[in-house]
Length: 309
Image (cartoon, rainbow, N blue to C red; front, top):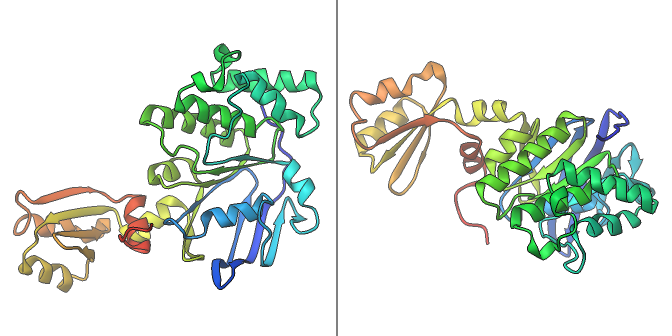
């Protein structure tokens, strides 16, 4: 559906900084996005995710560092860069006075796409997101999931080489979220380069080839989801409610990775640790839960469990 022009690094950021007064929202981060790759940026509220992507799509000038998109310098060639990018914002900023089809046709005009071609592209995208049967309906008659799919279609109207998604499924029910995931996965399979921010760890694990976790404007770790889980959370996790001092001493003496919370102990182990077998006979009766390690475990271990408001 989308013709891709290959380039080794779609994004190349080096020592990227964004400063507001005395506050460094983005504090010297370096990363790259390969052609045809989906890269996820994760972090708590205020970590610097949105500030980073706003610099990439030219909405906010960087304070210092180097930032190239498609091999072009964002400072000098931002107009060319913006013409090749599709952006799906957090909010559903569709025009409520226009029909579903008209929203796409009008937006195509911002890229100087001829009217006939704009209609063809819009019709094709509506079929892709399964909204062609609602083409003449007003936007306000759509469900939340339909609106998010329409925002995604609008971001694709200029046939971009890079799609930037800022929390694309926030507020959606599970069914609508999975519908959006399926469409994004298809775009990635077709070779579109994607940069994604999200608070849903399952979404990041499902869609992303690589991840960056940032906090306080700095990169904490980066790598493939499975590799990060293996390194920072192991394979098996045991959660124990109201652990006694004997169990705490056992976990510490065994040097297992663990988090000791107010009323809960979380123990992380590699396959070779056999943590469940070692704990089951003496400590785990009814108050233990065994599960596989997840990306959420990694996120919470690295960024903490305190609320960010």
